Length: 302
Image 1 (cartoon, rainbow, N blue to C red):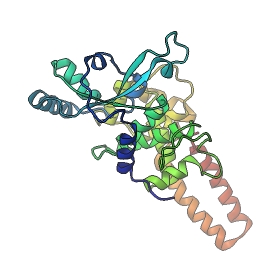
Image 2: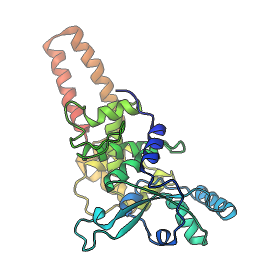
Image 3: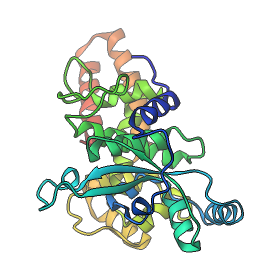
Image 4: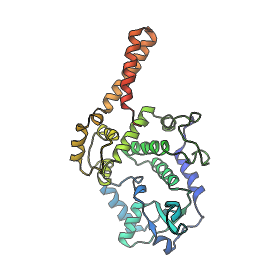
C-alpha cells in the first residue's frame, strides 16, 4: 500500500469541504460557536510559553488566521432533538486562538466547512494534527493511536484517497486490518500502531488536565504505565492526579504486566526463535516458538 501524503490529503479535504470561498465575519456565526468536549481531545495542548507567545502575537497583530467552523444542524449532532433544523456552528480548528480572542475582545474571522457527520469531523481533525510538524513524539503516538481506535470502530468513514464514504468496516478482509494499513501509511511497525492505540486508550482514561500535562511534557510518566491503563476496565472515573495513576497501575495484575521494554525484548526473541525453528525444524524449537507466540498475545490491546 502506498504511503499517503498527509499534507496533500489535508489540502484536498479542506478544499473539498469549504462551504464557500469567502471568509465569514457574520456576528451570528461568531456569537454561536460551540466547543464540543469530545472534539477538544483532538487539539494538542500548548505549553505555557507557547500559549503566551501566541497570545502576545495575536494582541499585537490581530488574529490573522480564520477559525475553522463546521456548519451543521442540531439533528446531525443529536437525531432525537425537537428542532433538528436549527443551525449549529462547531469549532474544528483554532481553539487556542478562539480562547485568546474572546478573552482579549479581539475580532476574528471564520471559515465554514461542511461534513456529513461528527465522525468525519474527528477524522479530519486527527489528520490535521498528524500533518503538523511541531508535535512531540508523545503527541504523534497519541494521534496515531486515535486514528487506529477511530477507524477500527467505525464502519462508515470516508476513504482517504478519494473521500468516498465506505459502508464496510476497515477490518474487512479485502481491505486489510487497521493496524497493518496504518503501519504502512506511517512507515512504522504494526506493533508500534498497536502500542500507540494502547497509549491513546490509556490517556483517554485520564482527566483532560492530567492528559495535557503529560502530552506537553509538563509531567513525566512512563509510557508503559499509560499503555497499561488500556487493559484496566474497572475505572469508572477519569484519573485526575499522577499519584492516583501510580497507585492504580501496580494493583491490577492485568495492567501492571504491560511493559513496552518487555514487549520489544520478547518480540526480538520471537524473531530469533522463529529463525531457529526454520533452521532446525524440530519439535523442541516449535514448542519454544509456540510458547512465545502465546506470550506475545498478552500484549495485544483490542
